[in-house]
Image (cartoon, rainbow, N blue to C red; front, side, top):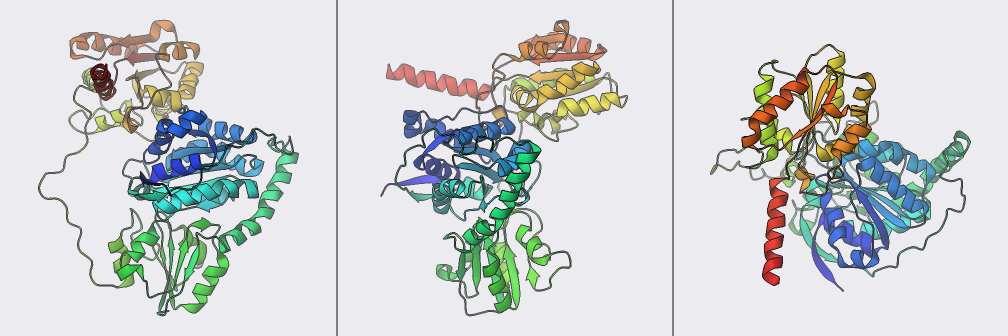
Length: 536
């Protein structure tokens, strides 16, 4: 049998390809980015012409995947946890439309907020939508689950939410591969009105979804991914979900836990298993990465003194779990203390040397001294680092596209000289509609779209802006005289000052587009060209 050393993300991608995938849709977002990148580079995916181009945002990715499912093909849509907020409209309704070809929604949660605004737990979204959730505990299980989840999706006529977390996404393991399946042939849904969510049809489909819940729970009870592991010491019973199961077994020699354990990797929760554990054991400890999702389910409104976990303080309420946390909760020997590295002083992240964003901020900072602090609304991208020293340029960063709309709201409130700072990829992701609002009301706002020709923060993926920003802004109704541009270099500093100052003074909507390619993508292109030259 073939075996590969893969990241968790890569194992998911390989499993999808081996399962007969026809399309992967995504917007780059750590820790999910490598899934789509693996498909893009995979030899079989190229031979089969599996779709793997980046989407403009997670909502368009989700809708495109649903369209491919409608056409009978197997498809996967990938995003990080906050991306599911963007895709929520289509995601929630996909549970009611159901599927034709198998549909998996992979969502990578980021406990401890390594590269995110929050720690939200996507299991709540899956539960909200009443769709099955798969949560692997290791890379091999991630591969096996994806391989099975497409069949599961088609059998139960539902999309499947596939939840992973940062540690599993970005750690490697040897993966044993399964047989490569053929792609599905094109087919229409048996009912051509299945995907038409008029109220009369949606009500019918919703009743079907509700009626499916008992079958989905039964599937969880008998799933190979959920296990009741017997133990002689019933002073405590343990429920461990996803990667938290690994943290449990790492505390015991040969992974043999003396207590009864339920390993959960498929939802809805297997209630019969849990009821048995509850009745057998004096105390229940719940180990789960993310929010206390299972703990809430078990304790209910009134609480249950028998159940312990994140809510009771036996485990940290925030951040990632680790084996030491589990050891403390179980009362084992004092674990090895985690020590901070003392060799180097902490080094906060900073913009790359030579980054064009830096030159824009230097000019903006100089101009904004004339207008006072607190007026620069920013967004999600490399340039968010300008909040830190030495630049300290921006005042907000909330979600994709919020720079423009928050600046608009502040302007509506009477704040003069409001500036929105956004990148080219973020603008095409979620900024265009906010700019349209500004145009519609002729809001006094200056929007700076710092264009570096890439999605830089997540590794340099292609940007949908692709030299179209001027056309897009003009098409949205911005007056052409107030769509300005300059090349952000130190030698052009005076020109930048002049343009920024003039547009901030303008009583209406203005857009400034500083344009210079990302230094990192330029560096990669140069290395590639050098290698090609040597080969020739």
